[in-house]
Image 1 (spheres, one colour):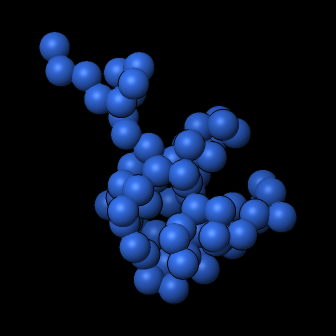
Image 2 (cartoon, rainbow, N blue to C red):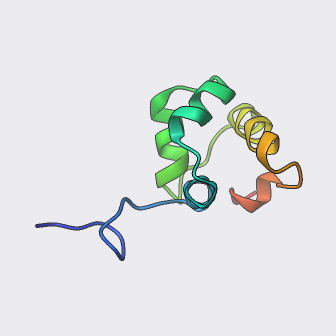
Length: 78
């Protein structure tokens, strides 16, 4: 059986790890940000994904509902 990641989970980006830490689902992020499933999935699993500034703004608006002190630089290389 093929396994991803260290413990057999999906590969996760900084954003994906943050969601996991707080028990937040990608579905929640989709609803709060208004972004599509594929965009959220890429942002949560691909460390090399470079979202547009518009996408980053939408993600950060949702993230700040949970942690107002988070910055885009915490999740994305800018």
